[in-house]
Length: 299
Image (cartoon, rainbow, N blue to C red; front, side, top):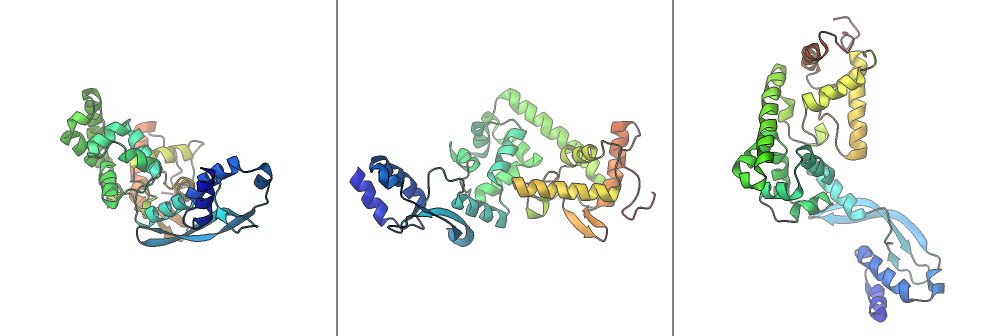
């Protein structure tokens, strides 16, 4: 076994087989004398090109080089995965769902992997692979994004009722039907329905949620006595973009436009009217934000 591993290590191309090389290196160093393990290795941080479905992406590369033989390899405890980084770049370019988004969608409706897989009509381990970082096909991604809509998931529940228990099926139908009714009523005042925009780069790969996310964020930011509308819009913008930078998904799913006094959500004037209407119902007439417009004028 040792001889086979050593020979394999010598002939592996370093750029394309580093992950395979990691386990071979473990096997070799487990049998070689201790003094060989103590050889000084040079740590390399560079850029490398990884091809994903016919497209090349430049990603960060972190590996080690032996000063004696010139071999390059990864270690088993490396905290950087170049292939995963390339997959994320491909997902972003193609407006595809990230693994964390798929998990959040499933958890939002308290579905197991087995149940969602059955609803979608996929193989037993397909969804598990996608949630753990495997790159989904474009067709499967479209199915996931459609299922992440209330109308799409409701259609799947009706088409494949045997995929979930009767109790969970009734609960899902109740939640989806009630949400669809509330959303159509509340968002009717907007010039365009932002929730109709599928998850993409402009909304931080999250479908706009006026009630669950947007109003929740506004209420939280205004909890300490209210803020000016200009400041509120900026806080929402920074919160969405910071969350997107760290988690690859925004909080509210808002699309923003640039105005002279700072970023604002699309159709923010009508959003303001909806804020007032909704918070009058929630707060018995007390508005949590100060009633001034973007230029600071009283309204």
